[in-house]
Length: 422
Image (cartoon, rainbow, N blue to C red):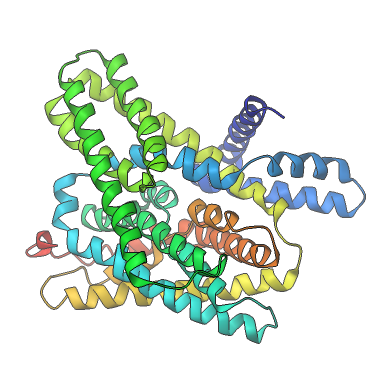
């Protein structure tokens, strides 16, 4: 099946499921599409059990032809990150730099270690064999909060601007850090490479810091071009080229494409709006990227729902996934509590910031994509299935209830006197 045919099917089914959700379930669009897609996949599996295997085979063939890892990490992610970063206020982000930076680095390292150790112990108790190195690899891929899922949910959650900046900022940057950690552990778990701290440090400098610098340069170049043009069609096209070309070039140079695109998106969304665009251009640019964001989100969550057709049928692994979902949430609580508690010694925070940051840290497609990048084998089947269970539970349970938690804590005013310091 050609790429055009696969894309056409995915967009058509996404539109159909979005319509069904709007008319019946009335859930947030992305969650609704994923839920309907998941139910549809389960329905196909049940049909196959009763002898109607043709529909299941066709659906499985479609899913097998979608390289989710490449489609997300090397395709959709850059566009989604740029669309999200464009609407983040750079001054607010810099004001919260310490809490965002600590959550995206220290918090991620803490979560990776806790999840890796806990997973090894729990799987051993359940009789599921997975090496400690693979457990740590799983910890690295499941620890980052997903910017796509997070920003999609925050649109309707009613979070205060300060908390929204913290949650969004962390999700925009921690996936780039997580990918670096994942790559380092990947070499150990899959290739048997020895652990060398200097090598990991150089990888971080090259991927993360190099990606940020590359994104700054690309964003600056496009910004200068935007200043010399007053035609919204050309300006929208320039931003499109920035994302597509910047992502491809960063990947080819072994730099972090997600971090590069986030930095470029922040430049265009802040300095570009203020210094290089007319009001008419800003309106068209926002409309264009909002549509890109909605369409790609719909397709992404559809694919997540359909991926159940490619998961292991071993129910013990699914059961392990449910248990480990609780472990991941507890690790998230710890990873948030430690940096925030230390920063609270000098800064003021909302009394419920730890609860909201913990519950608002959704897992999403990035974790599934990283899991699917593991070479085929028993370890991959275990990690992918457990990851899938946790992602689906996270999106449904946390995504549908975060607004209730936010509303329950709105009666407590958020401190503002010293909050701008972080």
